Image (cartoon, rainbow, N blue to C red; front, side, top):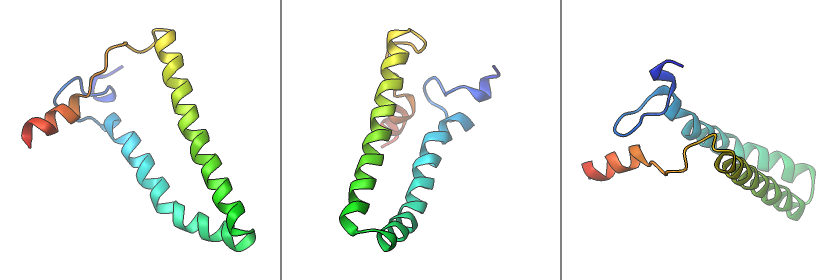
Length: 91
């Protein structure tokens, strides 16, 4: 795999490091529209129930994928916060 398609090891930023922030940004853009559409079609408490269940499912899926990566040694077990460390040094 080319280096520009891997996460930055320490100080640096590659195109791959944009995926998670862009996903969260896209979810934020569509949240209000989705909530209003669903609230107009069903009861408000059902809408809250749906959004809470969906968010908990995303958190649970992330946890399971992280756990599976750690148990199978697909990902290294050390935590490297490279970009956050770099930002802290600049601040």
